[in-house]
Length: 372
Image (tube, rainbow, N blue to C red; front, top):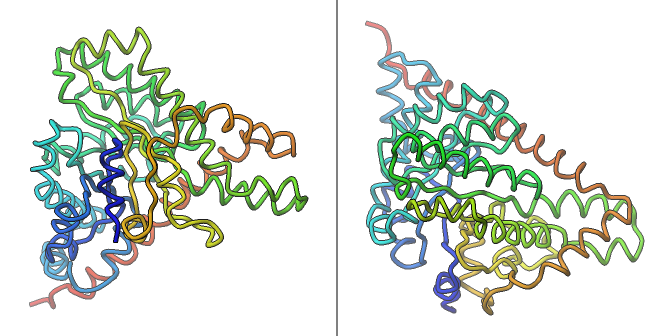
């Protein structure tokens, strides 16, 4: 057993767990991960909640009460998920206090069916922040075209945001612009900028999955040599963009007013291809002031055999750009890949939300009290 997780944390990478369930909370498992494995945050999404609610009986009592009240399935889901997020936020509160609000945070996502509706996304973000009612919550908003103004408006209201589903460098720059715009709005409203936090979730493994599929279709030795390089290259160039934006004059004016940098968060860091090291998207993306949110399997793999050798991002930008340029030369369109991934990402979360609706409805019917 190594202490790779401590070394990772010492390098400035905040370790968050990409999972949550009622069982994790009530069994003491989450508290144990915080205490022993350097976990300082939690992310959730519709897929995670769908799995949690459909497995075991941990939600039966609450579902039974909701069924007795004859609430709608949408209200039931919101009551269940916000309860988990609230309880997890309370467990992480000491971390939040110790890090002055930077970590100790739990993310909850707006209804993915609203991904292309700006006004509804802002309204949902406000509702979720009110429902959870904990200062260490992050509201997850997808970085769709409609999501960008919603991010700016939500930040402008003083609500901290985890921007999700970022795949492209161009979109990531727009996300950072939306964050700065939001801070400027908040400043105009007289809000305390030091209390507003944000992370930008840049998705990693799915980029390799899509590009490797296209490389395999080409099938040449040149194409095969590029397998497994695109995702890390893309993320490293995102960090370069982060460094540029958060050293600009525009940022300096906000920083002087007390604002916090929007940290890059590496998401989707579980390796999909068994041919690659299972810690690939951890060890190759070590950089100061970042977050890596990991499924538990990736967390355990990193703890067991992850080799943390210091910063593996700064100074790699020329090679990263060369790797992405080589893909274009083979006829693989970066713009097409990232658009496909964004569309699929929204569709997957919508599908998980639909599954969540169906399974929760079935549980409400199963647990409904007999009339009389």
